[in-house]
Image 1 (cartoon, one colour):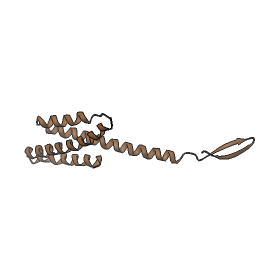
Image 2: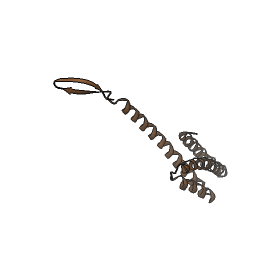
Image 3: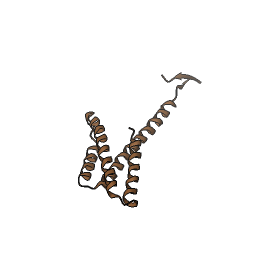
Image 4: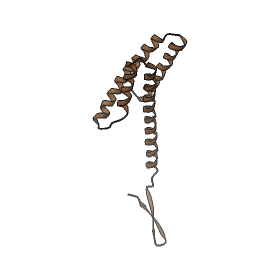
Length: 130
């Protein structure tokens, strides 16, 4: 699942939970929804984190998953939801920045000169850059 889709799902669930808790006055269902989402997203993030750890990179994902588990364990499910929004939003921004940088670098490489001008005496000769 792409990170932007994770972010959209988490934001949608947050909106539904806000409506359940504060408009419909059903905090139990909001808690169940957020807790289920938190557990599911933690498992998905844990799978991705294990792949990253195997490659030798250590990131903030360990701390984030621990924070989600801890906030869910003590019943502070809104904090878990905020952490999920921050993680999925940050991952989505990273993907966007990486895609934009790749596109700009490709454009830069595509626009590199293919010929050079070599001056011999009073004449200019076109010479391949290769």
